[in-house]
Amino acid sequence: VQLRPTGQGHTRGDQIVTVPDAGVLFTGDVVETGQFSIFPWFPPYDTDVSGVGWISVLQRLIDSRPQVVVPGHGDVGGPQLLTEVRDYLVELRDETWRRRDSAMSEPAIAAEVRALLVKRHPDWAGQEWIEPGVGCLYTEHRAGEFDVQK
Image (tube, rainbow, N blue to C red; front, side, top):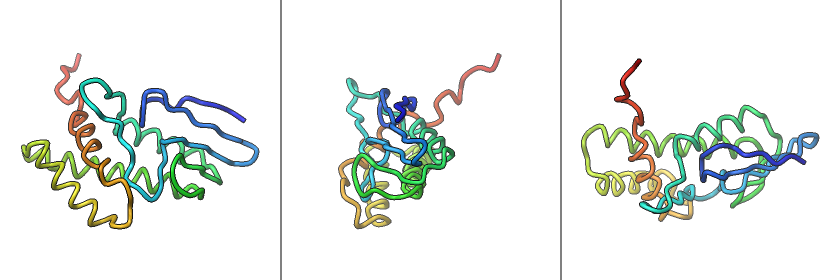
């Protein structure tokens, strides 16, 4: 059994457990199935979640090719669980950033994105986590885009 940090995603301290010879991956809250991903985004004090980092973490986990994925919430499944959560986070990011590019306010973006995602995923629990996800990704929007190149 191996315990490894993932880098910042769901939280700054995310860790996974693998059983390499069995192809099993325990993800903790990095993967939650049947629900909108839990974003512990409560500014100004609790903001160590990174939506952009979370997508990268999931891609690395996908690339590790586990056979069995044990999520922090939801049913045990295969590697498709990683892909489903990654795809949702990409969807949340893209819908948030698209609206931010049009200069909408954060509350307007959150309301519009929530309505859209609830319509796309009507059976998922945890709708209350959509707005914190929008807030997190709103602040991460093209971070560093205006850095001066040296």
